[in-house]
Length: 154
Image (cartoon, rainbow, N blue to C red; front, side):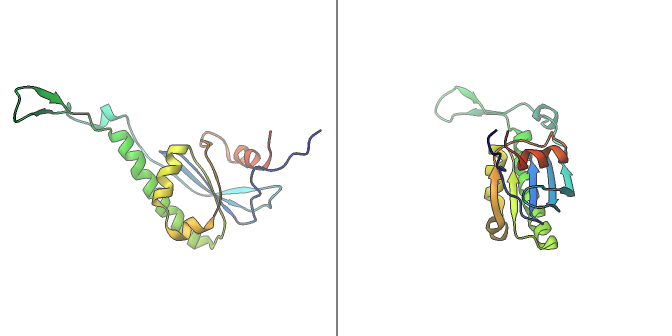
């Protein structure tokens, strides 16, 4: 039987962020690197209905000054804009939480697109404390399943 090594060795009192464009969980490891015990510190959820429920008008049309033709404008994707705004909000909350808990280590787990938004929004303090990033969407899992996922390789 092959030796199973952990994906990420979570230090004691490391903060684990698990999120996507509309949910965010801030977890604290009260266990050790081999047997993490994640405790929920804070959870955020954003109401973000589809664009067709947020917009009130059809996209406009532009009239060229030199030709009689008109061209359609692309509809604003309010749903996508809200996902980006939520990532900025989460980055600020993460900065405050790291300060409150005086945590030195941070693990980020988010889908690739959300991960990119978060990276752009992190403060230098948060950036220095990141020890691992995992491009996965684990927001649908329970805290114990997240713990197991991070602790053992299948």
